[in-house]
Length: 346
Image (tube, rainbow, N blue to C red; front, side, top):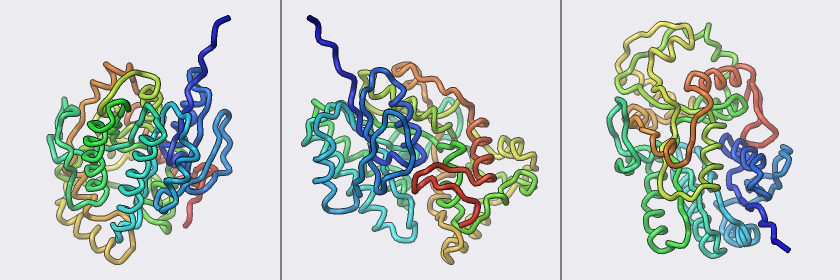
């Protein structure tokens, strides 16, 4: 009599957000995966066949105990949980993002989970070149120190350096994607960056007559479902280390103008930053000028390693991802989770 090997059991933190909802679906559709547990601060109404839900708030001191209940027997943990706000109080995001991640890493070690896949970001990279072919995964990951998001992502890169040395039995993978968009996450992203009181219908292309051409405004985007496929492959493929993830083309002012049927208008970055800083200080918008500074300095990435070692190929272009976002935000689309709840008005 032969023993049939059981499928993989995968636990996903931050499972109800933009990336998490795509990752749990990708895993649930993989025949090599028999069990998917999505963890989040709030249990969602969303139903995904093959996915069970659990609750844990990584910011709270009892989260190690809650994690210890969920992780035994897991074959892999994908750590996606991240808090973007409040941008005016970086201590809050540090406690949730950094200290919460340390709790997840410790729980993975204590439970003997053999695989840890961590959501890093292009934001972890130090300033670099804006031209192709782009930087590989060896580019320094010190972030842009004035932006809380970049500081936190870069700090966790250092933590994982030590974690890997002390726990060589754990296969650690770090994903460094560009900006991730999909239709059903558009309302969440509008609230994160534009604020709750920005009506989604104001982002219609015909109401945006021009795009400012700023020095350094070259960045990479990716459809969230393509990123989710890379996470799935990281679980089922025997790889380690970091992987850049981005669609083939680099987005700039001209590409945005073509998408929006708008004109490109040269503008000094200092003027735009001053206006954004004033709006941020008065709490008119949640997006901080520090993150704006970081975006203008982020390097262009080369995703060759993901293509060669994971066999990963994005199914959507950068334009596809941006179109999905614009459609979703103008129609107030979302999903039945607290982060992705869809609505046009705050």
